[in-house]
Length: 332
Image (cartoon, rainbow, N blue to C red; front, side, top):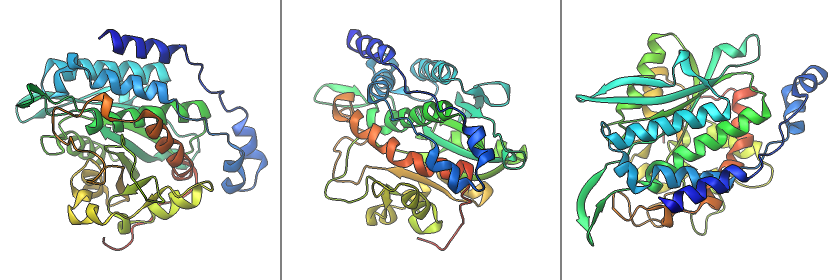
């Protein structure tokens, strides 16, 4: 615990990047969004804060964040506090989105940044990740606690980092909902609940961008992350064209082979809204040996890499929440 507190303390001491100023004036001065966005300075992700978030969520004290446990309640409180610190509003007045997970009390943690455009503010982009894990399991080398650092404290920390950047930029024409899901490990229950709720409340969700297991870099690939359901929409193309400095995403054959498109929290939003809903990941079946194992510890993930993933996707995120309208395409 002392180690985690030291990491958290160090993160607090790091000065945040400067807030983008006068974006509204830029918007009025320019004729199109393509003229505005290049002038918006996107802050760099803070690897120390990302490490602190992963370290707390994957700490022994939270006992693997199993749905319904005391540990996941503490994780949810932490995430609520982080969103509040960042300056994100609670979704519909409450950060906690309660639901029943096969008899267990569960809660997504959901915040939002309202859109600023008179028309586009009614369109919603969901950015999400699951924060639950599997708790205790059969012991391996005497360790029975599955901490879930890569799966999926890393994705959760990535969403927090994106929320921090978007709040600093303070320019999103569409409304952005940050959804941190519980009970993914029980069958995508948290994302199914929120997607159905948003559908019932007639929210106009136009895209869902999900993050899963982003803690370890892939080897010998030109792109930094792959996207599930690669050919189902133009999301990969939009993200690659938005970032002029590097190739953001590509198509991983294993993702299609194991049908990963249907196995993470993007899928319920695809089902409910039939809009581009896909997951970014860097777990490629060769670069991490502890999936659903006690060895999934903070020591096995790389926060510098995670920050680089956030930096790589941010131009695409900015395009999607401001001007680009993602389109459905064929099947993978």
